[in-house]
Image (cartoon, rainbow, N blue to C red):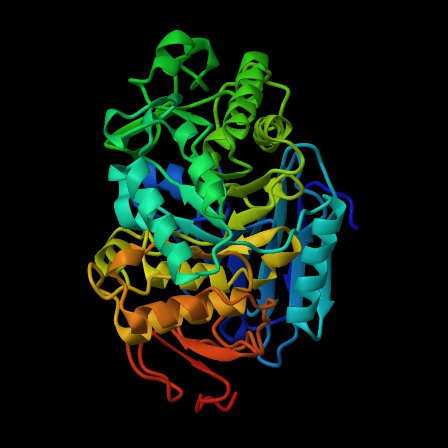
Amino acid sequence: MDPPALRSWTLPAPPEEVRVLVSGYQSWSEAELRPLTDLQSVPLMRWRQEQGHDPAFLPSGEAGVWRSHTLIALVRPDGGGWVGCAGNAAATFTHWEARAGNGNVEVTCTQEGPPTGVAWEETGDVIGTLEALAARLGQAMNARTPPPLRVWCSWYSYYRDVTLEAVLQNARLARDLRLPFDVFQLDDGFQAGIGDWLDASPGFGGHARDLPGPLRELGFTPGLWLAPFLAAPTSRLAAEHPEWLLRGEDGQPLLAGHNWGGPNHALDTTHPEVLTWLRDLAATVRGWGYPYLKLDFLFGGALPGVRHDPAVSRAGAYRMGLQALRDGAGEDAFLLGCGAPLAASVGLLDAMRTGPDVAPLWEEESRRLWLGDATGPSARNALHTALSRWYAHAWYQPDPDVAIVRRERSLLTEEERGAVAGMLDVIGGLRASSDPLGGLDGRELALLRRCLELSPPDRPRTLTHSLGGAVTHFGRGTFNLTQTAAGGIPAHGYRSREVSHDRD
């Protein structure tokens, strides 16, 4: 491993012949495989920069300049190239930039936090080298890679209008239909407010602590959603403990991101009382009977700001908060992260969302093209990014989000639903569904059963070309993320190798 600090390399390669594989900062940040001379877009809206990227190291917004977090790969037409990867991410963010030069490529690496080792290798096999360096990082941070689980989640059925009875109704149907779910997970909507997790929403029809017993009687492990590093400005938590909030240079609590109808505060995870509260929160919901926790919007713990302990790096502060949650939930709890700094979570989370939310539509093209934001919910965004992080299984169980098999209340075509199913098979991590089970017909149930079949992770066949700016050519099949048919695959489609006309 090379010594840390600012590093730079000049690569003897014509920029127009090089592809770059980059990974964004957190779950929803884009991961891409693109020609180096293309433009890396940055969201125009500040709140999308905060909620979808690292505001301290944003995408470049420049043609021929690509930024990446933790690792980067430059790919020559022969499949060889160069790979860089951080050696440890427990307290340090490692930032990469590749810049098209005059007949060459300039690569720089900088770090935020205590200096740590960085690997940089020229290789004839970029895929294999990237996998090896990612695995080395996972080993250094004691990655947790438990067996994948099959999960039903309430979000894409009921969103914030979820009720206790609706979850139980779906659980009963799953039992009666013999659907092989391991976990039934209650998502956002049960709580009184963001930050006020222990108080029930009036519309939930009960309390979250009332759900685990009946779910266990039906044969399922209970799961619960939390956004533990956030607090709504209107929450009792923020009102009673303003000293717990992350602050700006002006001394005022930061307003970060924008969700649930407005901005939210982030907790200062270097404050001892916050750490105690996080431990107690995780221990409390574990005591209710939830050994599976989905921890969402975790980027809040690592936002730039003025902290109680200014000596702690952003990555270190995030890790302190995550460790408190792990301590409270217990070593045997299954913790899934989402909206989370990817590498800084290794060793503390069992699973991680590795792309944006899936949605019952292919994409919001105007948002991606005109606002520069491909971090929002859509099937296209989920595939684009999750497929380009295939190596993440060395860090935790990857979660590419849910299958959507329903045809009612969905704009996805048959090809698009098949592409999402193909993504789950290729990624080989968690399998999840969020469809209302009572509305599925026989054909939809057959697709759901296929989506719940566990499979080992696949790996790319090539990085020298793709169908849509992402990693699309895998051992078991090929994805076409473009708007037109290509390689014998319809637009937005997937073909397994057995039926694909792809000859690559």
